[in-house]
Length: 85
Image (cartoon, rainbow, N blue to C red; front, side):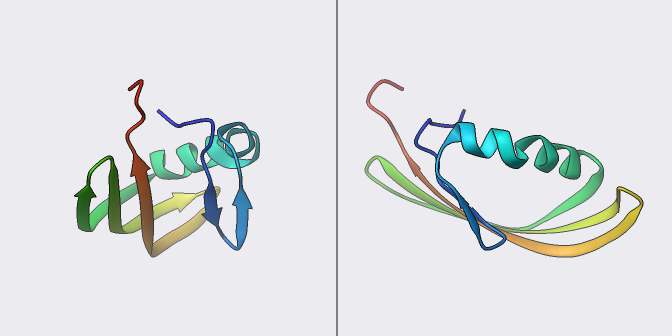
């Protein structure tokens, strides 16, 4: 579940809503990860009240659109529990 107020910083660009992210590259992100083997290297979560920070590191390997992929990636999420959730 993604909130309407989603903000995504990726590849030097920013998308400022769930609709903008979905319109630009959500489908491509899903397809990319479906076609690769992803090894989870690290995952740390810290929670404070209604907010949590997730720090994640992974290694992705395989083929995507005919190209060989062998890379490590990182993801930082800031999550907030909404009152109606």
